[in-house]
Figure 1 (cartoon, rainbow, N blue to C red):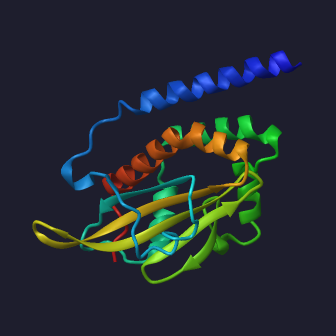
Figure 2 (cartoon, rainbow, N blue to C red):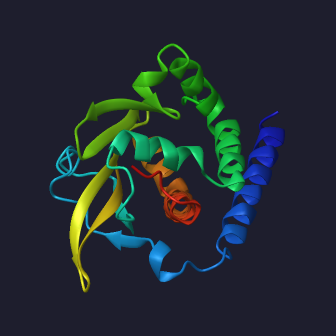
Figure 3 (cartoon, rainbow, N blue to C red):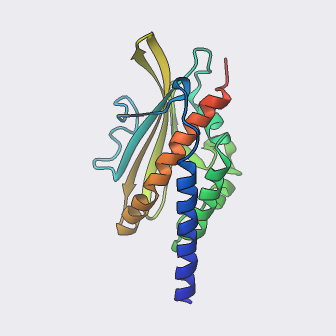
Length: 206
């Protein structure tokens, strides 16, 4: 039985790899939709949440002048318009981790049905402010937080609004560290794709 399970797991990992490298060949963004890798914003509520995070990254995309300024609505729009291959990745991830007692997206969505205002997509809402919403989840292997923050940045044309998507992860054990090491490339690909896609579709306007 273990040999069969190992072969199935290897097959799923191979499919994940295929999806990953296929997504790498997506069209290049134009200047208005460019996603930038940036430092974790010092003003974010998750910047100093963990003393030594096992993962910490942030990506920024410019917002149009007429885009809404509600971080929760921007976050809901962002996660509601992800590419179809992101859903395939999530289903494969669920199939791989379910046997280890890790929460699946199906379980998290079931939890959200009891209080949809307390979640954005599958993510629990921890705090809200006028400029930032902090999402995340705690699990047996790791805790993570996701910040959607509006930030004013200086550009050559003057000041402009940017949306910063920041992720920080704290692992509880060796399995958590292995897990985050394995999914980190996919995580970054999904974040970049989601921000770029939302910008191309067009952010909600005020």
